[in-house]
Length: 104
Image (cartoon, rainbow, N blue to C red):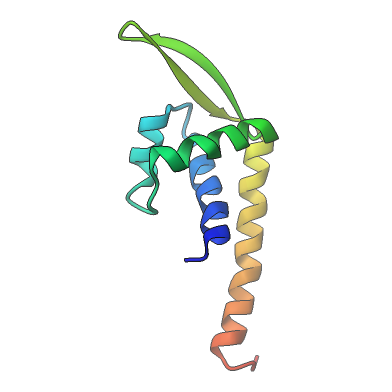
C-alpha cells in the first residue's frame, strides 16, 4: 500500500478508536492492529501530529503507580472522520469508473 495513503488511513483509524472513548497507546494499537498494521514507533508520531492539529486532546492519569497518557478525540477530530467518509464515497465513484473501463 502507498505510504502516504496508509499514513492517512492510520490517522483516521486512530481517531475512530477514540470515538469510543479516551484511550492510551497500547490499547489503541490493540484496537487498530486487527485491521491495519501499526506499531508503537508508528502510533506515537501519529498521536503527536493529531494533538498538534487539534484533532485529539491529552491528559495524564496515574495507573498502577505510573502516569499514563490518555488521548481523547475533539470536535475537530470528529470532523476529520466525516471528511474522510465523504472522500471515500468520492473515491468509490472513481473506483467504479476505473473498474468499468471508463464507462458509466
